[in-house]
Length: 232
Image 1 (cartoon, rainbow, N blue to C red):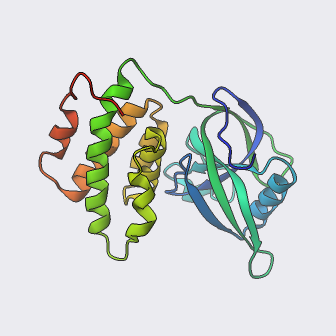
Image 2 (cartoon, one colour):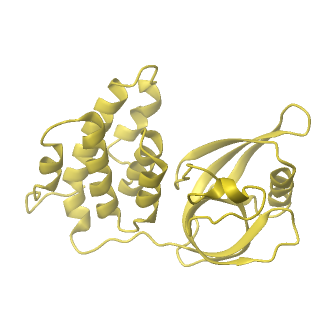
């Protein structure tokens, strides 16, 4: 099924990679891309002919020196499936990716294509004992901080973020969606993408948002232990 989550531990061979500066792609989010370089038009064509999957990797610092070659990329990246592929001006394409997992690059392969390919393993979400109890307060604080951030952003569409306040939303989906939506740096987003323990990812995001909206005591409130019987 297009857009379905990848199974943890799944090995992806010869995964096409679209490296981009300052961009981090999270699972369970949508990413529109305007594709115009010939090598990435070829990547889209190949993906459409196979499983529609593309890895989106953030370029490491200094990528400008070798952009048209193979500059270093982060080893943890998001994978998406093409759910929309529309023609634009000339040979250009407008595609829409739906995030289906985070992966760890095992090795980069010699590519017969003009684009890069890697072998990668799907990373499992990690939950330790009592994490699902402890995360309740983090999610409450996270939603409050996110609401403050959105309210202070000119032109932000509140209606588009309402779904993030649904009580039945999976904690991992919520954390990844907010990580993708808020104006933090590419380095901060990469740090969140690389954190496989959901509770710790939520805690880090709370700290980043507290700094972003400058709410005194937000970090302290997020670190206060929840009641013994709390749950999500």
